[in-house]
Amino acid sequence: MLFHHEIVSQSICAPEQVLIPEFLLNAIEHLLVVKQDVLCPKSDIYKYYSDKNENQLVLLLNPIDPETVNGFFEVEKKTGVVIEQIFKKIKHDFKHIEYVDLMDLKTESQHKQILFLAEEKEKRLTQAQKTFIEAKNTLNNIYTIYDEATDPDQIQKFINDLYLWVSPLLDEEENKEKDIQSCYFRSQSLFHLTLPFRDIKQKVILKGHYRTGISYCLKVLENKIKQLNQAIIRYHCPLYSNDADMLYLSNQNLAIIDGMDPHRFEPIHPLDKTFNLDEQCIDLKKILLYTKEINDAMSKYNKLLSRATLILHSANVYQKQYQHIMIQNNPGLEKLFKM
Image 1 (spheres, one colour):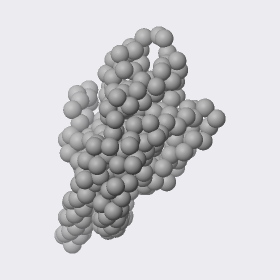
Image 2: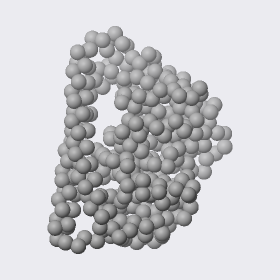
Image 3: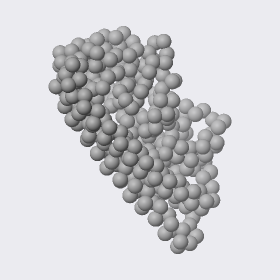
Image 4: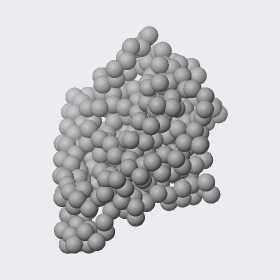
């Protein structure tokens, strides 16, 4: 049902919320809970499962490092592995749960080093979270400007036109799965964000500079499609998680995507379609009156975003050191793969 077998389970700015599709959790009976902060490099899992069907394997990527895994589910065997930090936030009853400690530390010095690295990573992660949120808040003035320059009737017409274009692509058969599933994109990195979308057969890309308008359109469109009992997975950005950034209709392999910067999605396949909100709904003359205010806010936003990204990189340096010690003192990750 997922369009790609790698997802992020936690948001950087809202780590208290874990999003794993319910149909995926329902498929798992035996869960192994690892007590460490991270599990292993993604390459270790692919190395072990190189001769197996990767469509039956779903990876939970670490939110600050897409090359590190915090868990995985082997759907065919109905088994899963997650770190304890994620498990505590999953609201689901599994038939069998087993805990395992992957580190066998020999000295007090190693224990202190592991504790230090974990604390330093969390400090920097908290700094990055605050800076990312501060960056987002600098855009509030721009949202207000666009709100005042928007024609509500044209917004509704835009949604109706969009729905009329999408609805013929939908299935007539009723979908058994009534609830909308939710998860995060696989990474906050632009490269990792864009790459898996090449496998989607058809994309509807919403363009423009009016963030709240695009989010509103996706929300209304989701409700309209839901009334037709279609299978929908709502994807959220792992950075700013409040609004949906994509609606994925798995039966049609169709994605309706927020194409506003920094997503930068462009049509790839001949069937891809772009709708521009600004052209139809925004009085651009009013926007031009506030060019300086908009440019100043965007400049501040980009600086804060760059600063937060550097802090996040620093957190990842500590995480990598933690992971290195963990691997050195682990007699073998193989037992995770032999459930």
